[in-house]
Length: 399
Image (cartoon, rainbow, N blue to C red; front, side, top):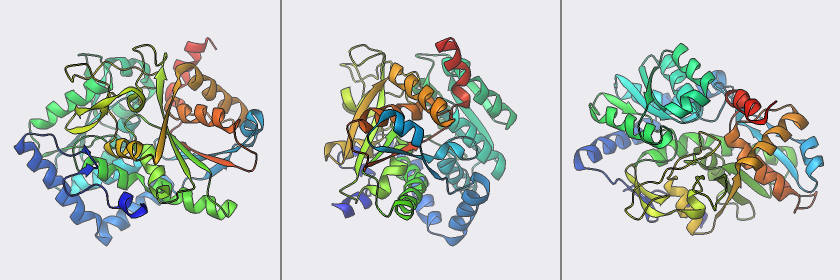
């Protein structure tokens, strides 16, 4: 069982029946070229050394694991530990794959890197990585998210990225993906599309997972060193699913470690205002790959919603879909209100302001901890910090 997880995807980019390349032949050829370049370069000592050096001296890796004692005492039950990806340079896990993608684009001789962003974390991380390697960067972002995530918008401009506001459709993440992809298609030979999660056509779900898997490699070794055992539960929020695949991958062969992905139930699963793809989605194609997605009877993506801009995506990473079907990962959903409660609880018990995305995972951890014993441990991937959300939350709660 362990080995089958490690050998995915297959040569066509499938994780079981999910993933692949649902693309016209000319674009499939471009994606195959990216895959070939990635497979060639990732094994070289020069690429690995450069990436590892940047992880250590630019990002500040390894990120620590912190025992949230006061929060754990407040909840009762299991001990809650945090993998502090919020301490990375640029404030989230996104920098892990952005550096990899920017280095790959440079290696391939591309002239411009394009991407979409929701909360702006991927945008800021990519703009930083592009400034570092000296390559032009263009970020597409929905108008609603631009208004909500103003600090990140300012950072992207300071870092030299060209910001393209997306005014069509939902004016959020799904339409930002469409907009960026259209620009990319104007010149895929010279442009590089740096997808911001474990989604999109092959090789992106594999590539982003590989770059993010440093999170789980560190966390497993750190937890063993600190506690001489593995955590009972490892938990992460899931939008597209990059931070979750990042921490889950190393633990997949550990059958005794329960893995839990937490998605946004928004204003409730009984309303249209959620993005609970794994809970309520059906199998179909979106953005060049097959996954569970929230779609209408014609197969068109439904408008989705989450208080966390980085989670409101109607699809999800294909490996997550496979892991759900085989029962290796359990997927749960928490509401906006539960997320806000967790956001404030961590801020006021530990002095750590989490990203609204990460607060979804934290909310479910707080709920689950109460049902577990004090001898048990939950490890939460605290995927980002809440600087970008502080003004929005303060206004929302009337602070």
